[in-house]
Image (cartoon, rainbow, N blue to C red; front, side):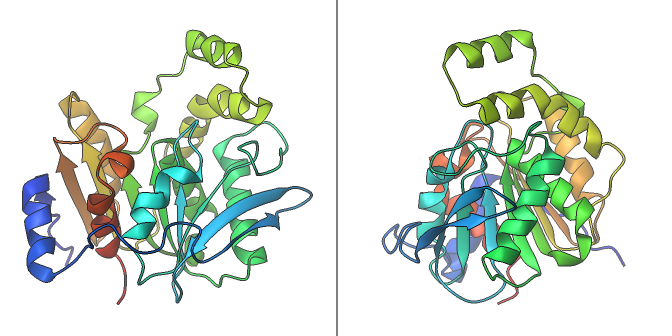
Length: 260
């Protein structure tokens, strides 16, 4: 029987983890405490920053324009697990990679990164914003290698918002070609996901409803409806960058899908 989805406000969610003793005081090793390195993914290298040890490996993919540094706070709360943030191609110090930079290309490189780094599947994948599209593509391409999915205010095909003005603004900032290419291809990346389904693995979606409409919630709820063990949480306290504004909340969200 399909388990009833859980819908919770942030204060109830944090109260639950406080009662279970989850979380930490923010101390401990950061993203680089477990080491870092540049891994070849087929002619170019991607920089990865890992902490902790054990299996399964948690891989976190950031939103557009963000590098692995945004996960440092989350990783500091996940010291008991092997968690990794990485820089996609074009995000320094990773090398540039082939274009176009769409989710299919990025997921292919994520897969090579994990395997070439020597991390065995299955993986717990965490994605924020555009990173959410990337982990969905990974799950569609390699469903047997996914242990669980955690979406942090993910981009969704029903909310394609990148336009020519956004692209021209990014170009004027002198961003790397790969980063501009990601932006140009976000809408097409999302459209590639339309009609795909998640593998039936534990899945949590954390949605920011601060300044958002019901449609944003409904789009995210479509993801948890695809699996038998899905949980949809909302916060009205954090904006889109929940992982930066409330790292402990995101770490506790990830803990919900960990097998131990």
